[in-house]
Image 1 (spheres, rainbow, N blue to C red):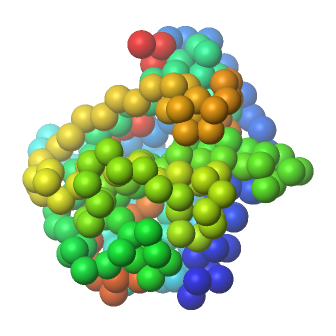
Image 2 (tube, rainbow, N blue to C red; image 1 turned 135 degrees about the vertical axis):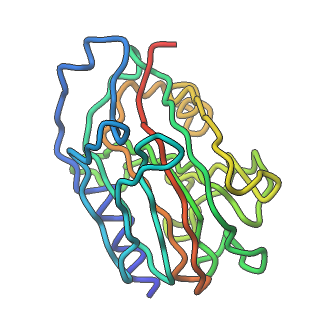
Length: 223
């Protein structure tokens, strides 16, 4: 099982071929246009069972629903984004239920999250130089906690950030806005101009649980 999850991470992080979208010339670059009923550019990555992702109407809006029952798979969107033009990533999300507080998210046996959003910087042929930030809705870690992903080792090249935690309400939408350029600089000490992909995942395989989450549109802006 651990090898499978490692494979998923590697497949997400290392299987990137560069693409540049003309939309980057505008002040708003849309990565996930779920409200328009589109899953264009999003591809599945699976390793144990299948998290069910589908577009649904909720509260008068079209959003992406993720339902994981002891499963783990993600959606991956390969887009090269110039952070010098649009450094801020915006999205909203909410969860229906929590995974519980008995698993250690810093160990492989507890690497489950009701909702998470990745930003990925490809290392190209030097795949070991690939970097990622993973913004998670944590069950057992406090908001603001940062730690290396358990499957990526302790080198800090895949960093987990608890953006939401058990102190945040279920069934409530939260809007997020992160300066990805600044976050990458803070975590890795580098001015990284481009990211190469976005991924989302709701998983509950290690904790043997069931979780339902919703994701709103994901887009980048200049400010």
